Image (tube, rainbow, N blue to C red; front, top):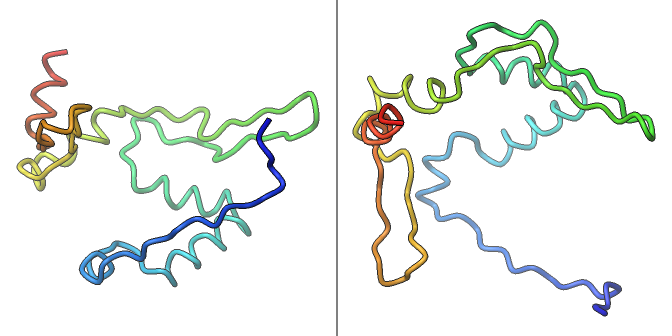
Length: 127
């Protein structure tokens, strides 16, 4: 049986300065967003939901109950999304030739494959 009383110290690696310069949110912005998500979760997530293209926008952000034996967690329950449209289609005009997915094969001798939004869209349409 594993002894869970000892704690291991995880090694952390700071991001490169280039990554920090191009990040969408800096550390201070992240802390601010996190604090808001805790203090006003419905307001925070309603704002974040504006970033999506909804077929039918939700009328309620959350419907949760953490009562023991009756736990219920629903987010945006009456909203309707098209996931493929949000993840792929809406990016075609501005990012069609940019990498959407980097596929790392299990075999380390094989190179990673960069799949563009346009290639991904083509494959999804075939399905």
